[in-house]
Each structure stands twice: as structure tokens, then as C-alpha cells.
Length: 401
Image (cartoon, rainbow, N blue to C red):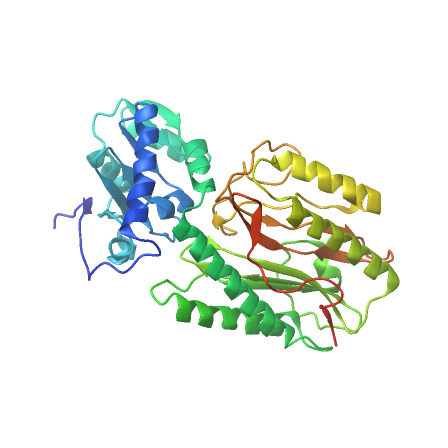
């Protein structure tokens, strides 16, 4: 029996993608500008975020490599045979499937699309050293150019369609938060409370985005000592009177991440905790106020650092003040050049979407112990920014009795 290295296969019609054909064509047009400017023969995208951004297909790797090959005329998703026709149904453009009858079939598939290339673009921040070398050897040792920074710059400016989806995600995050608050009571466990919020968000995604894949939506609901880290996983810890809580809801819609994060308390708040909470809220409010076009990420950071210093909590700050939104999750993405940190000089522009999320942490055993964090999503516009997170924050709203 002769077995194919790769093949084309259609199983059912195309499914509506999260964005219009015009949107994907515009993204590819901008990518082809990069190809022209850098005099490339083609681009081989390999990351989850870039394949999804330019084709609409969000792959599940499970140890297998994927790609989206873009030339001046074609865009082809290269997928593993284990996924059968799903990538073809879920991508804008063509799909070519490689089999696992031979270990190098992935590279053979790519070679079939970009023969005799002299100069090619890749994502250096995604490829392992082994796969980078294998790709280079398979293509005959062409000149390789890193296009990851250029694609990141492109993704940082959101289209109107992207902003509409992100706004919908923010509303769904609020729905999850509202469902969670109803479950907060002494004796309830983190995991039991979290499941209610997750279910509420998945139902909302199914309602408002019926053609999307339902995957990766989650909740982190932390209590007591577990609030010390922003990304601490769920536990079975049961809530006690006076506990500090960290509510975090994350709906995922077609690879697009949105988030709601709030500090809450169970029943009552001691004086030291109230002081720390109010300080973090004050910084949060000021951060929202100063987000506008023309200001540098480092300038936002410096101003908020000064305010935290005046309040006596700068030494308690745990990470930067926020980041870009779009194609993002715990597993992929991250527009690192759009984070509110001391070392980021990016200037905010209209249609950037960012979070404002100050956090301070006071160690266990000290007055006010716990992690305090608020998080809103803002769309930068011509005159300032629009806060698209509507869930209330602060002591006047989030002491749950």
C-alpha cells in the first residue's frame, strides 16, 4: 500500500469564522507588505496566535507541529492528519494535511509549497532550536528572517471587528463574575464557586457566538493565602469569614482572551486590609484615567509607581500594570511590546486594547495579608480610552455578606 506524505481533503463546508473574509484579506495584505519590505519568498507561521490571526484556525498541537504558509498569492494551513477535515472547515484559505507515516512529512509538506526559496520569514520566538534547524535544512539553508516582531506590531492595532469581539468578551466576563458572586458564602469551596462562573460564561458564548468553538474558558477563584499569586490555580479550600478573595473570569472566544479580575472579602474587612485595598483601588482608578493616545507604557508605569510610593505600597507591587489584549491565553500569544512596564517604550495609539491591573501582595502573618488586584479592559481611542469592563470594584461593592 502506497501511503501519502500529504494530501488535500475536504470534509463538509466552511464554518463561519469569527471575522469576515474582508478582515482576513486585510490582515494578509498587511503581512504581504512585510514580505515585500523584507524581500521574502514566503513566510512560515508556526505559533498558535499568528496562525489563528491570519487564517482563523486555532490548532491543538498535542506534540505535533502546524504551520500557515503565506506567499504573495497563497495562504495555506498545514495541519496534522489526526485533525482530519476540521482545520479545512475552520480556516480562511487552503488546507494541506500531512500524515505521520514518515517522521519528516511535516517538512515535506512545507517544501512542496515553498520550493527553491532563498529568503524566508519565520517566528524565532516560537520555534525550538531543533525545529528551527530541521526547517532550515529541509529548505536548503535559505536566509532566514525573524518576522515575529513585525507581526506583533501588526496585531497590536485592533480592527473594528476585533474590538467588537473583545467588547463582547468583556460583557461575558462580567456575566461570569455576577454568577460567581451569588455563590460566595462561608463554607463554599473555590472549585465549586468557580464552576458556576465558568458554566455561565460558556452558556453566554454559545448564545452570542454560536459558530465558535467552545474551548479554554476558565475561572481562577482564589481565597485567603491563595490570592498571593495572580495565576494560582483552583483548590478545594473553603471560604472563611473575613477571607480576602480574588475573582478572575476568562472567557475565550475563537482564541481571543478577555478578563475580569476583582478583589472581594467575605463578610467583613479588617482595617489593615481595607487600607491596602483602598490604596490599590486608588492606583487602579488613576491608571484608567491616564490611559490615552500619545503616552508611553513606561510613562504610565512611572506615574503609577510614584502614586504607590506615596501610598506606601510600592515595595508590595508584584508585576507590571497591564498588557495588550487580542489573541492571548495561558498557552500562547502575548504582545510583549505593549505592556505597562518600566522597560517598554511603546506609545499608545487609537485601537490598541489594554488592561489596567495593579496588584500588591502582603505576606501571610502581616496585617492585611493577601493579594489585591483589580482589572479593567480599555480601548484606546482618539481622545482617551473607553473602559469596557462594567463589573463594579472597590470596598463599597465587593464586601459580600
